[in-house]
Length: 179
Image 1 (cartoon, helix red, strand yellow):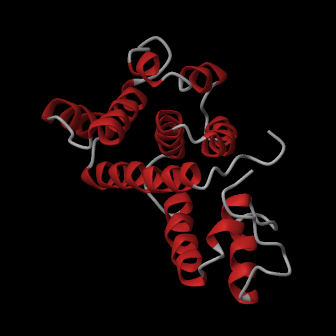
Image 2: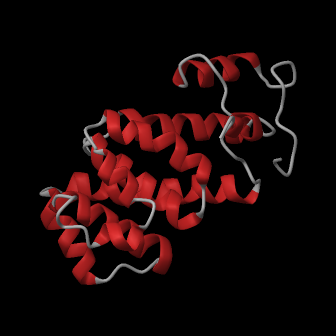
């Protein structure tokens, strides 16, 4: 059970915001949305920012989802992992990658499973999530693997944003529906 009750369809509002969130989510509200909607300004900004992160970056979707799954594992955000592991598969990830991302330290050394950019994304996510400070070696590895500054900036932002998401989920004890 979450620490606050999820808002029902009747209690969630304002209607235009609820509709915008539903559009982004393919027609339904997630448990996360039902918690965020306690504050309409927060839910609105969250929907806009995370919608852009999920759909408008130059960063390859596979790297985005690898980073999100790594953050979810490290922060104990089961909701986040359950929602992003299938997206990683849709973006070209493998079942082996998904399974390894359940143990980020093992994934960070899995040169036989992840390519150079995937390993760099995992290692950067690990440094940002666990240590906050990123060593020059990890930063340089990510920069070289991504090949351009825009993608590097976007990867750092994805990791930062999904640390925010996972910490919200964990604080409110939001679990995936039906899992």
